Length: 116
Length: 110
Image (cartoon, rainbow over all chains, first blue to last red; front, side, top):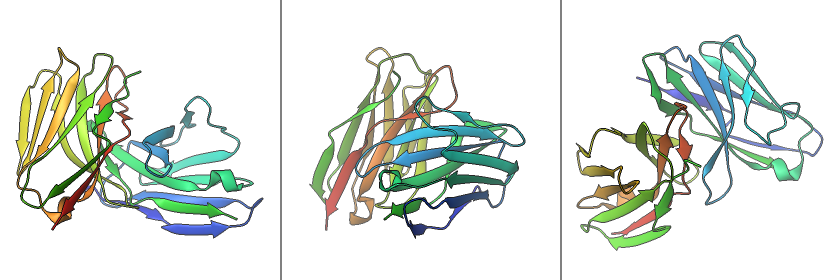
C-alpha cells in the first residue's frame, strides 16, 4: 500500500507555455501533499505544502503565482508551472502523508520537466 | 537550519563490502529518516529513527543515531550492485516536514 503516482513522467514544453503535473495517492487518502524540486545531484527543495481544500503554503522564495498548486481532493494534487522558462527545467517530485503517520512521506516517481 | 549533511558525497565499493554513510545536522530533532533514490526516480523510504532511539535495523540496513553528536549513520551490509543509488537523510524538528540533505551517491561495482 501507500502508492503515489505522478503524471506525466516526462514533459517537454516551449517557453511561455504552462504545464500541469498531477500527483495522486492511489490506495490511501492523503491529508497532506508536498511538492519538491530537485536539481541534478542536489537535495530535494520543498516548494510547498498543500492540504485538501485549503490554500497551499509556499516556502520562502517560491513564487506562488508561478507555481500554482491545487489540492482538489484527498487523493489528488496538481502543480501548474505557468509561463515556463528554461530555468524552470527540473525534476519535480510530490509526496503524500497520511493522518496516522505524518512523519512518513510516500513519494511519487517524479516528473522531468524540460523547457525549451 | 535542520538540514542534514551527508558524508561522503560519493562512495564507490565492491559488491559484498559494507557501505557506511553519515549524516550530521545542526539543531535538535524529533526524528531522522533515511531515503533511497535511484537515478531519475522518486524516493523510497528506508528507515525512520526517533530521537529517543539509538539504533534500528531493517534487513541489511542498520541506522544509528547519536543526538549528543547530532549525527546518524546508515550501514548497508553485504552490498549488492542493486544498492547503487543516492541515499538521503531527512530531519524533522518542530515541524513534521522533513528537511533533506544533499545525499550520498553510492556505486556498488559487481
